[in-house]
Image (cartoon, rainbow, N blue to C red; front, side, top):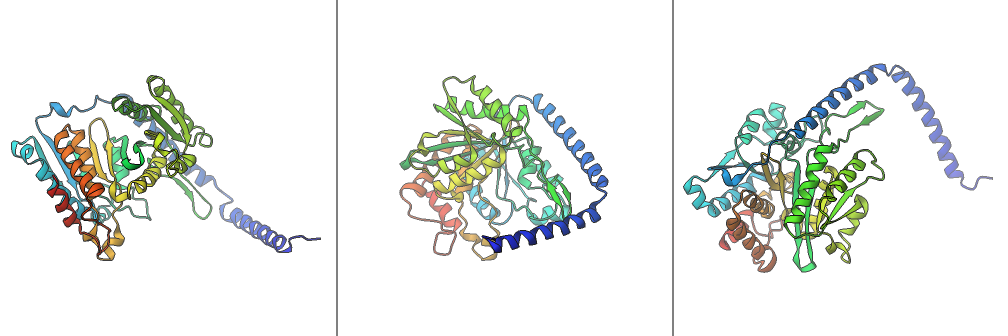
Length: 410
């Protein structure tokens, strides 16, 4: 007797389909040696590259001391989409905040062109060589969003810049004072799934494989950055966020090394959390204010910081810092918003995120007084007074109008 005749029929049909596909597979890919040989050669090359990168990390130079520099060059990269629009206002803001330092020659603002998607596609490079050279001639970068093509093999401009400049720490603050939320996220920025994201293996029509990379040195330095921040800012706990129960080699290594670093900071409580439950914790008002500092691998950090930004007020309200020992890059957390361009709404883009990134940049180079002025103005405009609101639509303020509002509160 068939209790579920429809299900039984479906299973028989599926088995027949699988048998047909298997036969087709054997006929088409009966000789897989060429794919295996190509994949083996590719993996060997990737492994050697990553071993060389790990060796280079182990011999890294001490971090740059901005206080010792006679001149600090700030590169301004508009990117594409709404990037040039919000960057125009950020430049105007920095010019006002730093007019004394610019006048004395201590600070130089340098505009860097060429990160548009059109130029990158035309040159076939995620970051064209001439643009990268201009960026490396600067000490710190303020960057607008950049578009990554969905198809093809072109890498994300951000991934390329993080690797080329060795910007290993992605630092994102999120604050909702009225709810007791004061979070700082430390996301490893140069490893995980992203570092080899465009270099996976594919057998067309059959399977695709990507790679995840975790090194001892890469994990140790992001863990130390998180615990040093906690120690220097009076924080008492750090959440180590992984999926080590499933990704036993990579996330297992990340968790192990983070806990080894944590042992050197006995005054700070370290706790292991899995990424799935942590995403739930952030929206749980009963417990979310118990968290202070987070450290996690690349992919998890990318996802969960967008979630956290929504709790703060949206991705348009959050700044992002990418920190290395030699360079630092600060950017809006959101994307290039091509839909706003298509719908003629680009002038209504929210500059709050790039402004907060500018504040983080100022603090990084030791200019706390102008950073405090900017933070105070943003708090007034975004949190307390709120006389003008950017909605991203024609019913809200334009990007320039909101920038004028912020500048009036400096």
